[in-house]
Length: 130
Image 1 (cartoon, rainbow, N blue to C red):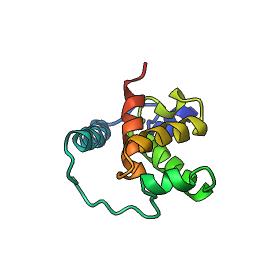
Image 2 (tube, rainbow, N blue to C red):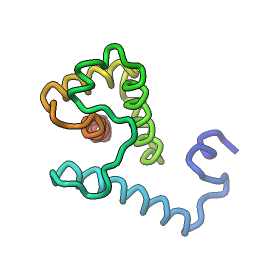
Image 3 (cartoon, rainbow, N blue to C red):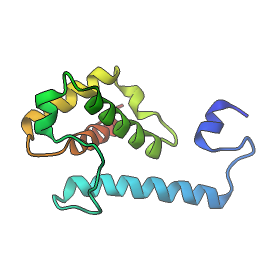
Image 4 (cartoon, one colour):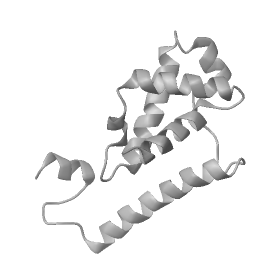
């Protein structure tokens, strides 16, 4: 079995129709939730995140805070793992430093928001990149 098949959950023989439907539904749901979060300003589901810094906190301490940086990388990795059935979207960036810089610029424009919102916007941008 190829490593790509293991990562994507595919068997060498192929996926059952039930598994294909399950993958399609979970990917569609995640895509819908990301799109809806960008369209609506209000919460669509519970907003509890553990250890998440606000943009104001990010701007004040991000250069020194390994915890905040690790939190953001965990968010981005989680989004990528949850959505990347066919493509590794994080491979479209140079590395963690690009994520930190992007979120810093975004937080300067949106200091009242949470960094998860910036991370989601960055992820949507990665989805659109060729």
